[in-house]
Image (cartoon, rainbow, N blue to C red; front, side, top):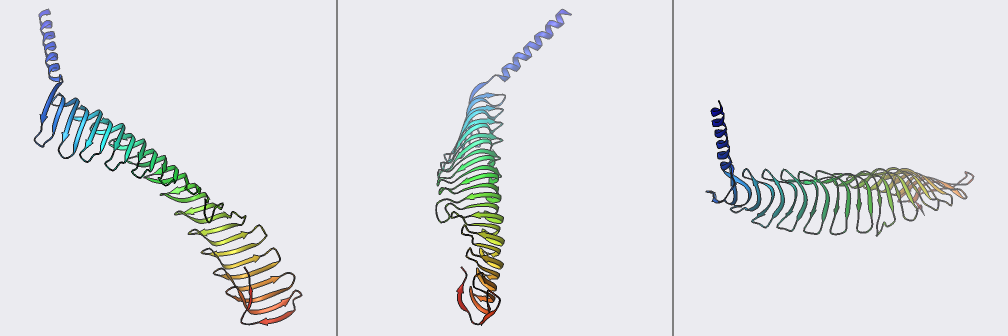
Length: 328
């Protein structure tokens, strides 16, 4: 019995020794029929451990291998000058790494299954830079993009485009804070205008496709204010315009101009109520609290046909063919 146990132990020991010999790494220098070459550690019929794999017309990999594939730390240099250096898993970049392209573009950050995933930074040839989250090679999550001309966006991304809440700053000092959709101002937001024609102006309200659209409030730098509807960036629909001197307009707009029914009042008592077309009075009532009233039609902002009354309601005269009186 003891003899049989001894023989069994000896056989198992010998088998383990032979198996270990088979698994032992060796250093090889191999050329393959397709032109590939490998120099480095070899085990179980495959590159395993540190080695260099050269691919014809493609490039060269120097680093760690497992079961014939890049695995662990390594560097791949393409024939066109592109380089990747970092971690690999089962033949693909996976983990932290850095990639430089032949045009100067550079990415440093996390990889998953060969693609940019997680936190990373890309620097573009023109100086633009993105720092933030990635998903499958595109901006996705919270990030910051800075353009070479000074523009800057901080906020959410989805599928490579600004989406969700964010802040966009312009080189002239202009600033938008609010909702984004597919890279455009879209939803509710606040825009403060920078240097230039509209410096000091402010808009708070709805946006669509990058333009003021829907209900909003526009405050001018001189104190004037418009509250109402917008369309394609212009006042369009019902709105109220007020001025610090007391001038007001309540009524309809179209493509940025008074158009439709509306009432204009000035601080010195002048009032026009009625129809407007393309920004000028058309058919309505003009009233001066201290002098007279006019009921009739207008053409290009001037009295055209109608009747003029004094402040007591007595007819002064009928007017035909216009009179050079225009409401500003």
